[in-house]
Length: 136
Image (cartoon, rainbow, N blue to C red; front, side):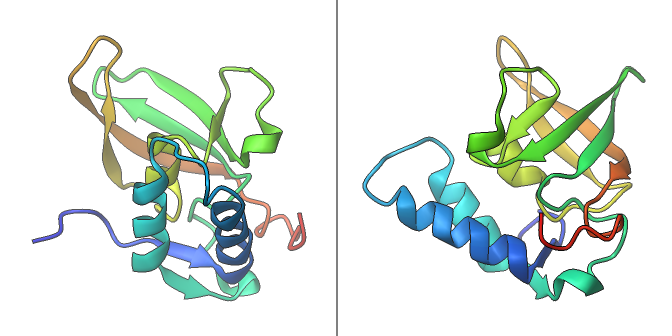
């Protein structure tokens, strides 16, 4: 039985991510298989039809740890990584796990030093589609 939450993906994000995967076909990277699996299982909707609380590419998301501590991350394409701690690449296993989630859902996240912790997606603070930025 699959315990992963259902995910929604925009057709624009799907096309761009498939192009990214194709460009990396000769390169091995951790998480490639996981990202492909996420794309394959997603419900795909037109960009204008994505719900406003779903994580899409370039969305800024607020999370809460079990301790109550909160933090924000923006899900970005690899070329948009700038070394800041506030961005996470879609190629990171955690990045691909975030894509398509909705506010209120939880995922397990690797702890520094080993183990897993439960992280709850509190809010999609910024979503390009909700802001009317359909061609970002």
